[in-house]
Length: 107
Image 1 (cartoon, rainbow, N blue to C red):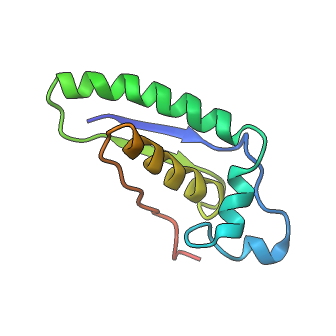
Image 2 (image 1 turned 60 degrees about the vertical axis):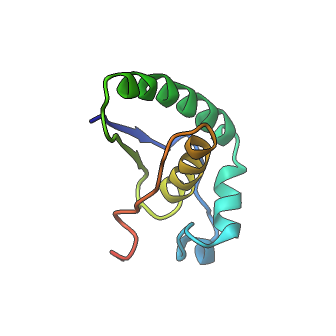
Image 3 (image 1 turned 180 degrees about the horizontal axis):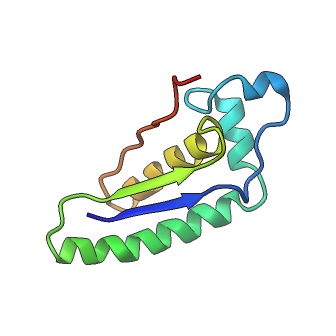
């Protein structure tokens, strides 16, 4: 098992109050805002590359699963948008990935 955690502080959060009250899950405007910020694409590309390298080793060692944590201050905007995008990109490169959002619903 691999457990890794990365913070998304390099990517800005929505500043408009009405956008802060909703999560990125199922809200395209918030996800689009987060993923459209400078650095978001670079973060995803670099992190998928690093994880792909590490996960290849796990496959060789017959490991069954890995846990990757993506965090931000409130757990509703950056981390949700980035972890959903990360799961999609990992799936595109052949890794079975899903996103679980620990802090959604704790408001």
